[in-house]
Length: 323
Ligand SMILES: NC(=O)c1ccc[n+]([C@@H]2O[C@H](COP(=O)([O-])OP(=O)(O)OC[C@H]3O[C@@H](n4cnc5c(N)ncnc54)[C@H](OP(=O)(O)O)[C@@H]3O)[C@@H](O)[C@H]2O)c1
Image (tube, rainbow, N blue to C red):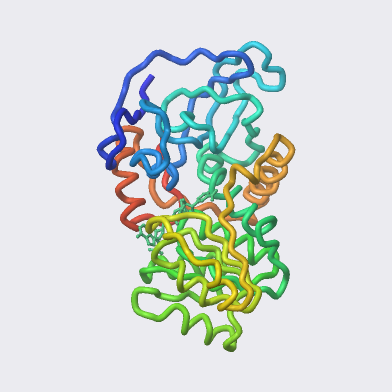
């Protein structure tokens, strides 16, 4: 079977095609024949060495497909089952992968494997951000950066579902249109408008209750300045680079602000929490109330191009490797 592996940290070219034997499932493991693998920003951090994963490794951590073998001790999963997962290191950019049974989520009727692979990691992230990190209430106004991105489009829809009003930022007309389509009431073009001024104007000078910031270095200061008193800055990623160390007094000066840096890992602790979030997300996809936009599909061997596109702001919604 074919897999995209990283042998040395580096740019997109560090992703190399490898031929290897079909993996045999061990205790508690399931082998899945992939139909699609999700491409996520975290894959680029791992490829470049920003996040250190022991070398060599198979890139990716999210996918969906059909079970082709089960190891000893697997009791609730059978050959032929349609399954999906997120955040399983080494279980992504390959024709066949091994996944611990406790990390698998069954794909409900009416949801394709491709859509499941497209929604798991970013959908679970959007879910924990608006239900747990800052539980959006009806009437809250929130700011979401990269409104047409993978997390951005899903989070916008979920916040609107909870009765929130969404302002987003983005960089092109096409992306602004997509963001409005997902439910944003206002889209700020940060390439030609002052984000803080516009957000203040849109909130009668008060500011927003929460900023969801996955962009990081380039947006962080503006995010703090867009908040109302006692508002919360949820820094959940660094697509423009990591935020430098800061003086906590800034939170006092800007109005008793809260700052948090949450991860999906800490919000899928144990099977019950994983299944709760996945049931919500996949359930909304199945009933048609959550739209999943796949912006780009690539063959496995073009994973490097998928990374280039993601890192240079050329993508919208989800990028997938299809197998
Ligand atoms: N904490 C967690 O557990 C968790 C889980 C999933 C994802 N994340 C994070 O969430 C963020 C969004 O992930 P995603 O997969 O949905 O990506 P994405 O938002 O689809 O793609 C990144 C977008 O960020 C914007 N951006 C602004 N400045 C950028 C720059 N200098 N370089 C690249 N992009 C820039 C671009 O949108 P515009 O053109 O509109 O500016 C770009 O399209 C990432 O930082 C990721 O690491 C965190």
